[in-house]
Length: 113
Image (cartoon, rainbow, N blue to C red; front, side, top):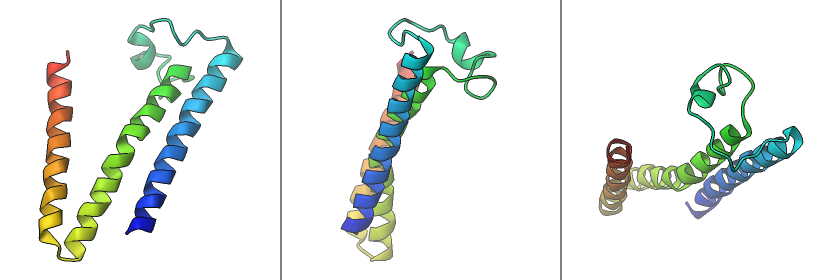
């Protein structure tokens, strides 16, 4: 179990660092100022990530997204592992933590605006 968690956390960290680093390099090479505010149309309009050339901030945000998703992936692996080993008490603890994380995300989405 520890070896698999090590691989999950290492892969998540490597992916997030690569995306953030790519965003910084892209910003420096393109002459972008990543510290100025970008209007929301830039992310959802014709210059968005899926409809045109991506902005450097897109890579930065994706890197931070995967950095936040990495512990959730490790927790999900623990849930599956404890369920397979019939350790129902630890499975319940992992499920409660996952429910708290989900509730926090939902509240952050709806109350954060």
